[in-house]
Image (cartoon, rainbow, N blue to C red; front, side):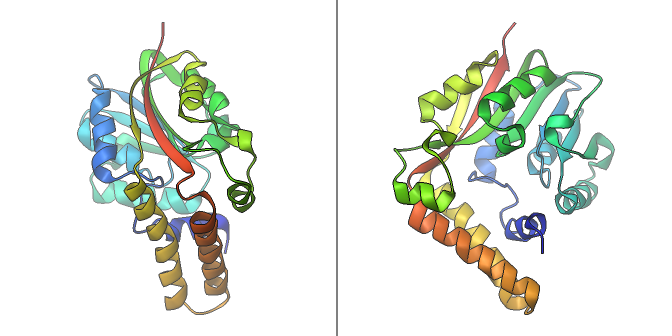
Length: 247
C-alpha cells in the first residue's frame, strides 16, 4: 500500500486535506470575489475539494487541478461528475512544480502543498508566476504557534527552520510580490477534527479490511497519531492566506 493510497483513505471523512472546516473554506473562497469567467488553478489539488467548491461559488469559472496522486485525481473526477462540474474542470497528473499553462489565472490555490516546491517562499514565487496582474492566491501552510520542543521536532522529523512563526510566514509569502488581504488561522478544534478524522478513518478501514494492507494502514495511523498527540499538537499551527499580486 503506497502513501498516496493511505492518504486517500485517511481523508475520506475529511476531504479538505488541511485543518479547515467547510464553512471557513467557503468564507475564504467567497472573500476572493472573483471576476466573471475567472480562471482558477489548484496546485497540489488532491481530491479537488477547494477547486470544486470554487466552481460552485463562481458558476462561469473554469479550473485546472494539478496533482501527482492518481487516487486523488480519480476521486476528484468522480466528485466533479456527481456535482455536474466535469466540463469546467481539467485535471492534470503531473508534479505541481512542473505544470505550465498558456494563460495566467485569476486565482491560484496551493493549500498544504508547499512541500511540492521545496518550501513556502519558492511556492509563493511559483504561484506569482501563474497569476494575472492583480490576481489572487490562497496559500495554506504550517507555522510554529510556539517554539518547537526537541520532542516535537523528533516526532515530525523536522528542523526548527522548516517553518517560521506567523509573522515570518506572512513575510515569506509577501517576499514574492504578493500582499496579504485576508487570512484564516486554523483553530485548535479544526486541528483536532482533522487529526482525529485522519487517524480514525484510517484505523477503521484497517480494522474492516484484515490483511497485509490493513497492517500497513494501521501502522501508519498509529504512527501519525503518536506524532500528533505526543509531538506537534498545540505547537504547529496552520494559516491560509488570501494574497493579491502586486503590480
